Length: 242
Image 1 (tube, one colour):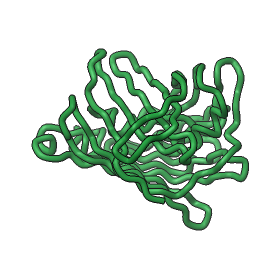
Image 2: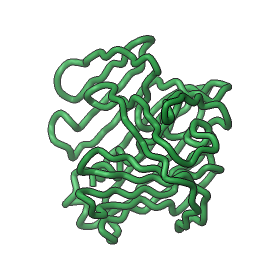
Image 3: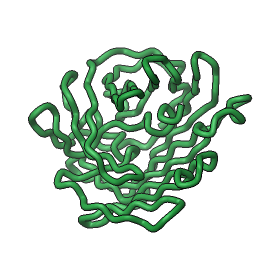
């Protein structure tokens, strides 16, 4: 359940490799919004989530807050969390990440807090234990999993198939990841129907799928998480405000 609520927001942004070529984000930029989601676990209502995007003096901030409900509040140590990312958006649509913060109080020591700061040519990563570590910035750049969210349609363009390769920063530093483009489909949610780009991210035992609205600023409208092939959790959009 841990990745449907935090890592489930991992998508793509900036300059990435698509197949054997490269594509630069360059179309519509971010659009402020706030969105509410319901969280389902094996079909049962497990909690709620919210995502917001705002801009002040050229600095964008996106935040996701997840909250378990009922018995899941006691049974799950992964659902309750807050993530915040700050970034700058250039006129060409590219994103320059500035900082990232993750607060997961229910996690075990060493995973409760995470801070990532993007410096000129390095990435500084600090956890709630030990000293901060510095990692070289990859040549093609790197992004946290929230700052990457909002330029999916611009980055991919009109493509609907292929692989997306990008560097994502986690508590271990930057690492190259691959997402599969699965096509464009219409998805019905409690908040209405959306034209989406369908993507899948596979880490071995765990698989996450994303449906990203292509005409609504790259907002995620549905996310599905599987572990060992079994459906484990779903996020569905319930309300959207601009």
